[in-house]
Image (cartoon, rainbow, N blue to C red; front, side, top):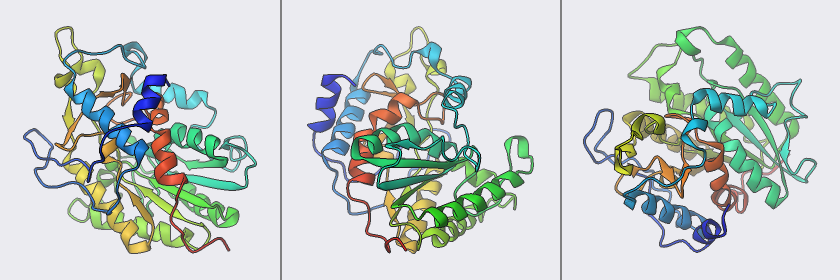
Length: 329
């Protein structure tokens, strides 16, 4: 992280009051409000990121990006996750996949699908600085919510149900200080039930179920709202393109998932963190890069660099002052 970037994060401008609104035309966007009012006033780190998002939206020329265009893509994201040695966590990989400050007195567990995997670099960096150990209990395309989903191509995915059951049992065994949950919006379209009209209600119920099963064991539970999908820089950044060509708006699916996660947190007493302002401006526009960092590797997976860029915000919102919870048993 450059000195200028660090200064921007620490000394950022005024805060923002909510998540991105979907207030514009375009396929897959919704004109309704998309934020969940948590009553939270942004701290310095979050205000700094909001300022960086606004600055990115105002640019009229592309900066030199990190990662570069050649380093982007779903395959590159998968390769990076595999290189970490922890593409998914199970009994045989649990110990070697611990990160942050292994052996520290405080432990944060990260539970969820590839969305949770995308948050890990930032959470691990924040945890290391704060003296927390991180334990990922993640599996791609397997939401933390207690619902059965399909795999790619609509194939059955019983491994997901098995993994979630193991993860819940592991959390109850570990009794961590904090559990962070994160699910991607595409979970709404992969329910085994095939339901579309009731998908949000089913996913909310499933998330409430999972949180209920770990509430007594975890010192606190934090639910991260969904990170909005966006445009693929490799496709929108043509030779004659301008930064505005890569700006997107949060989708209806994102809005629905925002409501699912916010409602489930409210029903269980968990802390809900609206991450929308970390990706989009107050007008609902979402840049494909922030502070010269590519936000996503493709249309959905956050880049490792941007995840780490958000480490100060994750420290501020998740680790520095987590909700009191019910205490460890």
